[in-house]
Image 1 (cartoon, one colour):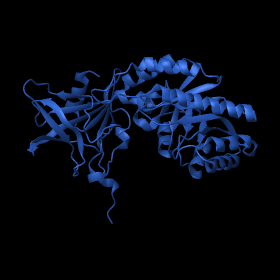
Image 2 (cartoon, rainbow, N blue to C red; image 1 turned 30 degrees about the vertical axis):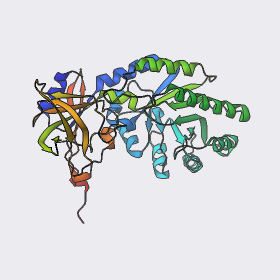
Image 3 (tube, rainbow, N blue to C red; image 1 turned 180 degrees about the vertical axis):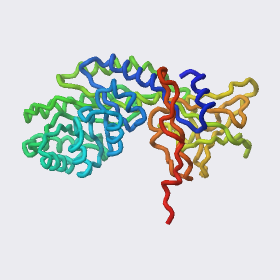
Image 4 (tube, rainbow, N blue to C red; image 1 turned 90 degrees about the vertical axis):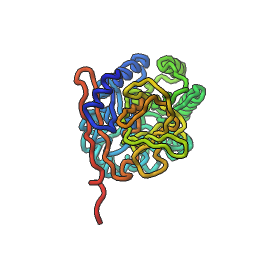
Amino acid sequence: MKDKIVLQAAAQWETPTYLFDLDAFCERIRRMKALLGEEIKLCYAMKANPFLVSAAASDIDRFEVCSPGEYAICERAGVTGKRIVLSGVNKEKADLIHVMEHQGAGTFTVESLRQLECLEACAAEQSMTVRVILRVTSGNQFGMEADQIRDIVREQSRYPHLSMQGLQMYTGTQKKKFDKIEKEVTGLVHLWQDLRDQYGWEGNELEYGPGFFVPYFEGETETDWEETVRTFVKLLRGQPFSGTWILEMGRFLAAPCGYYLTRIVDQKRNGGQNYAIVDGGIHHLNYYGQTMAMKIPHHRFFPKKDGEEKRWTICGSLCTAGDVLVKNLPLCGADIGDLLVFERVGAYSVTEGIYLFLSRKLPLVLVYSGSEGLRVARGAWPTDELVGCI
């Protein structure tokens, strides 16, 4: 995003502010789909940034939805049920019935035997058949072990209202080594082959989240993301699987389109260290992989100045010593009122913050597109209203 758009946002609206470039987000999706080709479908994990659902609606094949609230967001955005993969480790019966009674879901993931039985009961109650995919665990609380999946497929006749379409696997994010991805893909295909050969299973969908790496910090290698995708597509096409691949992505699609704007509101020097207090903080800004604020995120600083460069520890507005955004950030002529813009915050920061701490306002959310310019997606909303008085 050009500096003039960022500065226009900062001049017109208060900080702290999130700013999402919808054009950049949609262009990344379109380029991704061109690289994947027609045979590989793209699923947006909307938990990365639900503000982008409407922008993605015309290009994304599917949306991964993990809660009743996310499902409601999709409904408001006009996303049809057949494009929704209803996921999540906690699927309550009332919520499943609500989904089935309304626009439905294209596919339901199954995370446990209890979920499987609950889905069967709900579908039977609604006299309908629903599509499910069985999630394979990576050794944590998500999904099921391969032996349990084998048992389910072997006894699939016990679930007449469930159409078992395939398998799903997601093992984590920010993977730097492609050999790990290759091992996971190969293992997923081998499990599918085993189920087909042993039980005559006709499941023809494999959904996989590769967790491609996003370079957040200065000094990290800037990878050619398109070449990464080409290599991945070549890997998928080389597998002995003739069904449909669904590629689940959140961070990798959304991260580059986001900016966080915050202003310096105070300065001091304690113990030989320069401190700059900003009107935002760690309740809004969260970089995966940041360690004790030692890594320097990609950022911009306005106004641009000449002069002596000093190192500043950037702290937020929360009353906790942990509210440090970055240590030893080199800035020229930093002063009260100056603007810091942190880049690549299009994924998770807007949803992961500890927003109720100190009851400060939720930050403004702006979106930008060339056709509509800058507009408000959510106002700066007071959180004190969420805390009851006893």
